[in-house]
Image (tube, rainbow, N blue to C red):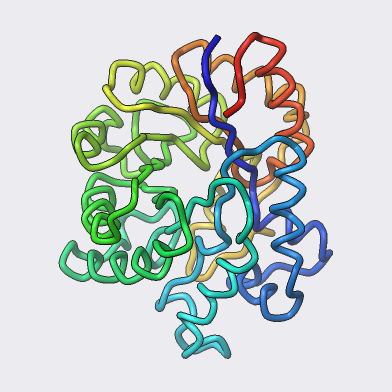
Length: 291
């Protein structure tokens, strides 16, 4: 029997489905202002599904994202709202997403610019979180900067890397995933793969299996990351949800990651409470314990 930490699933897509609104670049942030309590309801549904770690709705809250919008000037207040929505749950992971844009390592700021920005966010998250989770890290430079920034908060850090959907041995930057492992050693408490195709993640697990850190994954349910989504200020309606990723199919895939040594699993975009509930059941049926 292995102890498995069960993460929650995607937040932004789940909010869009529930509100039935057309997404905007800041929609998952704006919803906390327009519809207070909706984020907490999603957290509660993931708890009821069996998740033991709840990720704050802070992935997209960056100065560069809110600049020039009605939310400019509310930076700290937005973090306070997200932390309030996540309060009272078993373990809270404070999420830090990429600066500028997801999946665009070419746009990531230089180290000396990025580190203080990440450090500011980590400082806002730390008082109300059990750990910091650095998400959708797409390059070695991104990993180095966010690890340095997050370290200033004094909380355990989980580094979540995103890999090429066609080749799980490579980061989205094209750099070898294996080269990210030494960067995490001694700086992170766990190393994960997130927001990538489940099939690519299965390959990634073989790369991480030899590392000294606890490892795992949480995949997205998109058909692919499209070229339209890689433009400036994208919205998720440029992406299409897969039709073949049922809760059962996702759970069996994640069980395969566990067979390769993963001890932390969950879901990302388009992986909802039903997927997490089924994953929890399959983990227990296989003789493991959800912790």
